Length: 181
Image 1 (cartoon, rainbow, N blue to C red):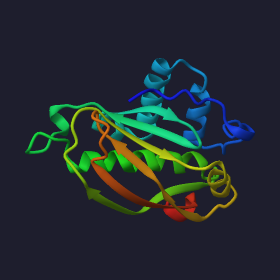
Image 2: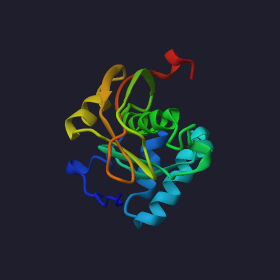
Image 3: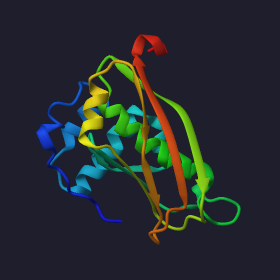
Image 4: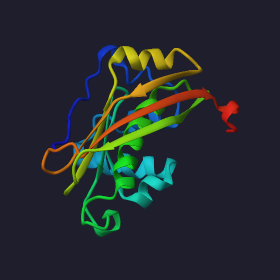
């Protein structure tokens, strides 16, 4: 599970990102060395979403078109058969897709998860990584509308390169005042 180094984005997509907390975090740490970037992204996302820290998630990459979230193996995330708990796997997928959507929503809007479907394919073992990706055109489409919905693709892999789950997540975004923020 390598650390991607894709700081170059077409059309300066990072600099043109909406002025929201997650886009600001991404801009603040772009160009840093991967180890330092991971530590700072994890800290800053954890301040914005405290549950990510509680769950032990790491943010390896935060870009408008690509997000990577990790989970180290540990007793706290194990299930009764010694694998990674189903809820931890779903949380990885939800966090990666939520962060990619959140970076791209207009500054006056908030992302809301509409549906989460998970199919369990095999037992997850070792370190886990969830990657969500959008084409540049999708990121631009989200930015152009204060209200909308999108299916956010995600791949979750374990230390052996297996994909223990297949997940389908549908997100919406609405003006913040419509969601009570």
